[in-house]
Image: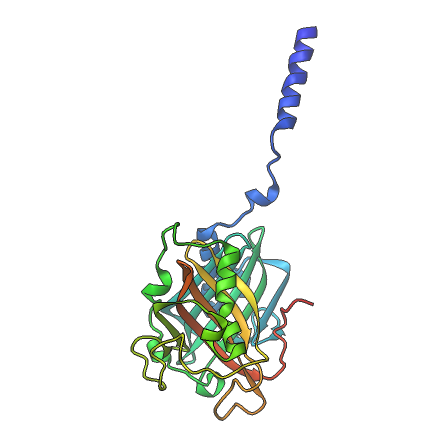
Length: 296
């Protein structure tokens, strides 16, 4: 009897010594899971069925910074998906980001969406919809057909930098805009680095949009002293840092530019200590418009 009691106590002690299996770990969402939520979201969107999306009871949804009931906005008018879909999957933070193009009443529109996933339910949905040149300043949607190879290279692990270093490198981009010079800011670009904005090649090899745009680092820049940004996601496997930026006064041009500010979701392909590609969806908003998701 004494030996049985001792054995039982030893087994209990061993069990208590084992690391606890946290419920959060069992409910974690890997890359396939996050990508699946993007699919679920887009399918539900074009079907006009928000009930098909697994969401928390307290889910928040914004479109173009305006808080809405899930099912409003583009949910009422989107009709078909296209082949363009660029994902940013942040497993550590449970964030699924996507740039895509959807059909809306016969017209194609650009959609950027950030989904926050907790316990396999969506808790946050932040979206931006760009419908035309007036809204976006630039709108070359015919060029936005498939995700680019450069953004979807999976770098060798030896070429990837830490999450923190990737963010530091990427944020030297808004740092360059703030200074009015990527050279002054020390923003590191690869020799073949390029920038697409709303489908238009704005910098890099082959750029003809403006004089000097062939070299992204040395091209002329406006000095945007009021630029602000926050990190939307970091895809640590693909080497993509996704920033939500508000360029501030002096950034908007064209018919909708008065008192406007260019805002954008911008992806930076970072590996080997440099930025290799920059791709953005952007939209003009009234100056000072809060995103609705900025830290208090």
